[in-house]
Length: 412
Ligand SMILES: *Cc1c(COP(=O)(O)O)cnc(C)c1O
Image (cartoon, rainbow, N blue to C red; front, side):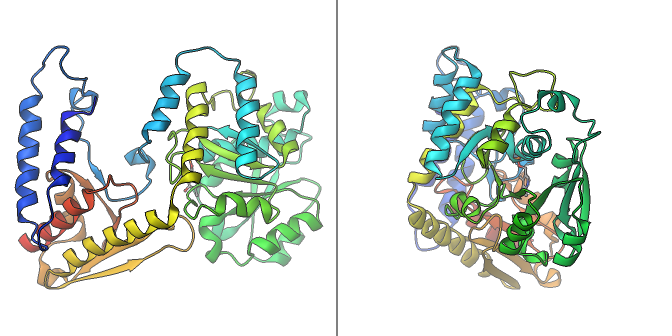
């Protein structure tokens, strides 16, 4: 069932890599593209439909990371099998959520869990659960917060766009910077304290103190860990640290369905959060449905992720990044830096920088040429540098990226 294009790429990546010379594989890449072009002629019944091609969309090698705009991550076959399986039978949605919630809680050694519509959805329903508890009148009342605690305290450095998931409930954000300010900000309307793990280093208050402040004032704490696996330990760490609620994206490092996520933590809040979700209708989260297929897909993706050899996977990423780094740095005037972001997207990553006067190309133009080339390659970057990660690539694609990066920089 593999598309011709993927077959071609597979063949291409199987070509032995000889002595650091990238020449042969680019020829193979071009040949592969041509094969793809020829085989695009309709052969009724003989080939599976190539939907992206049909729609006139170009697929690409993801050298960027888990970006929603690039459709996040790819699911393993066990996950898509679970999704296909889910599509074959009816089941009671609440009962499915009950069972899968228990299974995930057991796997992650926390009190309770639910599959949410992404980390974003987890934040909305988690806060809604905290605000309304098990009171169905309050559930129906949102986003009108009259008579409810409706303030969420957030460190200023953490108040980036994702807080919109919180104000979806009708709540408002109260920004503070110091622990002292946080304590002063707490009042009878304080519903929750919210922490953004990705910006841990930018905020003055760290995890332990944040959790302690919540406990001291009897206010629940929530941490957004959307992009924070790897390391796998993070799936356990923050519930153990005492955060009442923790969320992860399903379709980032865990490689589950892109529109699924995990809400972990205290049973009383997660049971309350579920009152806002389908099948219940008159709620703010009716549109944040997770279908049975994705509930199963999320569960299986998590099982697979936990069972993976994380050390081996890390070593593979390190080798891949080094290959691309060496290839880029072999071009005169080009410098590379291998780094690992401490929080969020914590994987071996590469910066490529160069003297524009020597190399003769801007970072934007470089990224455009990679995107427009064959095969198309997506990277991240700004005026100063091009950024690359390999964790969202299919094995072998790092060689194509290494060679294309060098080729584009050399030919500039
Ligand atoms: C990706 C991300 C989200 C949104 O996660 P989804 O699973 O796409 O809903 C929220 N917060 C942070 C910090 C993220 O990186």
